[in-house]
Length: 210
Length: 114
Image (cartoon, rainbow over the protein chains, first blue to last red):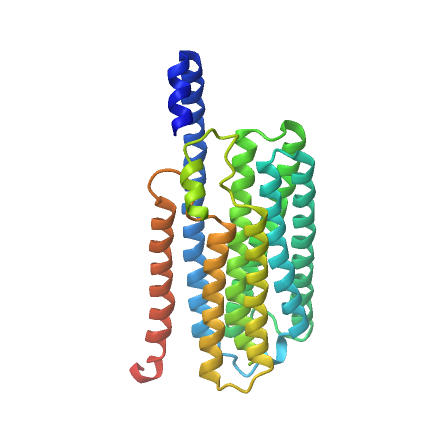
């Protein structure tokens, strides 16, 4: 505060640059706020799917139940992979704040690899379930399960493509206020998906195998 | 501590301040989130608690995990001006609670009303 005041008093040109910078910064932070509002709407989407799942959970129509279908090592591994990727995307933001482009891209690559491992495990799980005869049309429980977990998996996959595109942009333009905002936004998105997964892990998987 | 830091740095120049969290905060958050994932696993597979107790414990852990992620990783308190993101989030979480709890509640009377 004091620094900014003395700066604008010392010369006019400096004050002008500062206010221009500030205006630009405000615009970028408005975009981050806009993304928060998107995340809130995504929260509503997942909330609705969770409500559907909880209501239809017991309606297995004589088909397989969660207890028979869910493989414990699979979803535990998925959970720890996603938690770690959330942490590495945070490390990417730290590297960005220190303007270290290569370090930033490095952590993004680690995050993408972990995210890809997560999606791979999930696809493997779905394929195994379909082979056991548990498809989306078998019972109301499985319809709700595939839609809820699949929507999350789709979000993760979109995040991976988005992150790869951002790495290309970082290579071309480096860390600018615009790429900085984009990285902030994708890391918010990634942490949000981690939070949604924690609830999937608790409500779908842990309660399913109990 | 971090609040003070944010307050002081919030008005500074964009390049200089470092209010997006520190390595220490990220590592702390990561360790807490691992612990909050291991506890439900132990409660479900290793203890002989009754079912209601287990459900309450694991849902509590998930909610704490949500709060940890919001504060340590998503830096919900950051930024200048009014906290519109927090307001939007609280409204969103309220609607989610109404949708989920309301659906479960009304559907549990399904057999009665038919």
